[in-house]
Length: 503
Ligand code: TRP
Ligand code: ZN
Image 1 (cartoon, helix red, strand yellow):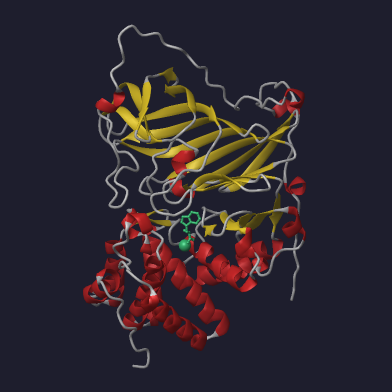
Image 2 (cartoon, helix red, strand yellow):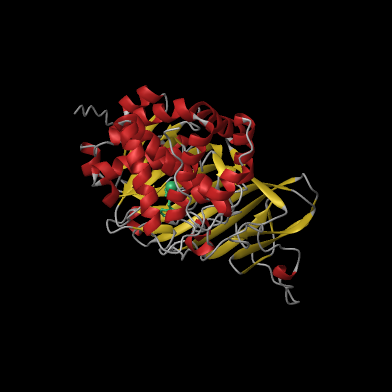
């Protein structure tokens, strides 16, 4: 097997700046073990009030965006355009000190807005550079704006906070999501669907996508990776600030950082093959010997770009962490548990799955968590398309049949179009959801089926979509009424029989 690996260590691809261009204030140096302050300093002001403050949560704050599964997630009244996430992380003391600035626009007249946020000590909140009142309740940070903001007007909220980040229980999954630490001390964020608020104040709902700038300061020689493209690394007195830019809109559940003794390894062959900058974030042993079949990512990107439309973002790659049995499609930087990487056949399938999410889930994002089959059913079906491509039609058919049987054996299946909030990532959402696309393909034929996928992606890229949006495109492209097919496959209590492909 050809294992040409163009592995360049971070040093080779980075510009290490000199002191003159360094925006960091002088810091006490590593001997005191104190991290430098955030790149931008937010002055804390203490206000003395005589009257007891009126709780902001009694004011005009709105509890949630009304998601069908998680009604309390996200907040109304505004729309975020950009997050600037300036973090300093001191691994020795497990301490994060953060300044998050949020560029937002009011969608109606507002005097108070809420953000999703859990934990930490908040040291200051400013709106357009002015200190403002805030309080916290029910997982929300409520911020009083200095004056009523008219619909369409923009404002900047800056929140400074410190503390030890912690993963949080998820309503959807049996494990904790958000900021996690592996046995080797690697820190990484896996937030889907409700863990974003464990590390950042956010409008934590997929319907409010935004762009992001990450400035992550860590002690040398640690590396900090985040979504998007590495702009520069600024080094000063033993600390490095890694600047990553995500210029395409991203849902809050896909934001991530990975911090640790890791290497950014450029895959030149995959980059050349796909036209996308492919870089992986790996521990030293995997960086020197790429795990099979990681080097096929360029070929996989090419394959899906032909089927769905061009790859949505500027870069792609995976980060491998320990103590994690799963994988998550964080935008441009999927995170893989080491146990997934260790079984090449399984690894290949999961590589394909997380890559396919970059189109379906990340670029086209569900408007509501109840539409999760638009992510997981599509990524599962993409696994079968790759199988058909690499092993042939018989292997595809055999897998479809085997997966249909697997569903028969599963107990208490909820139909994929109506998932339970406490079991959002169920076998039904993945497999029954994937088989729904197979049934659609048989019904309308290959030409209309692939045109439907392409039109759906082209129509909703960098945006959000609902199940009804997808059905409308399938009906327009095929010219058929597909309501019976989708009713049966997405919403009925029993798993439908597979359509016959013979006729
Ligand atoms: N979306 C993931 C997948 O590709 C599953 C998942 C959801 C997940 N939330 C997670 C994995 C949190 C790890 C951590 O199927
Ligand atoms: Zn998935």
